[in-house]
Image 1 (cartoon, rainbow, N blue to C red):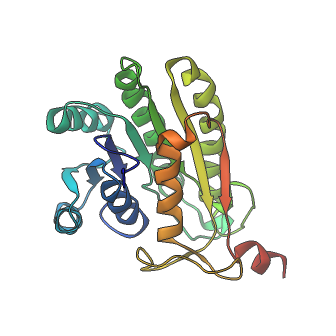
Image 2: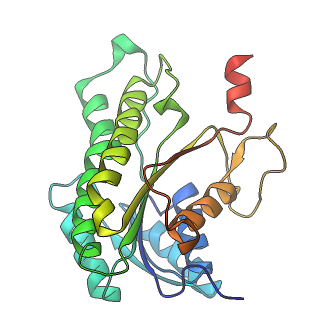
Length: 243
């Protein structure tokens, strides 16, 4: 059976654990060559080794994506490792649980830097490469239910993820002429340690495997006319909120 992402090159941020690691593994299983990005080198190495044991191709780039020069360094590392770039997954995220009046400037700045500023500059740098390729490219931003539903305890998360959806829509239009597709996924509560298990109904939390499968689809030629879309994957979360 042909793999959907054969020989495509992908960067995945937040890839040292959880959802980012699940997405990286799914991309690699479907033929992608993956660069794993996060701050923690040891954990990145463990994820990369797991991908390789499963027959995938993975390399690591330990980076703090909020550093001023992170975006060009990450893209240069990808070009040096694989010679190209077809896919960018902005999965890294910051989440601060704090009451409105207790939020500090650091809480706000760190969340916005991770959830919005870094994804923009990574998109910009990746798109510079993708725009020179006749095959274009695909970018997927991992947003959140908090982009659309307010929560008084995670105000910076709500604000930054909502802005990420605006960034997705505007970047999709800016990059359409270059055949670069930009889409977003907004998950609800995610079942922990669920990279190998798909959900069975809308009464469950969404799983990491569910989200990773959708990412693969959005990055493949099956979705070659899909851009500027936001796909909600709330599972049971919406039901819980409305209860």
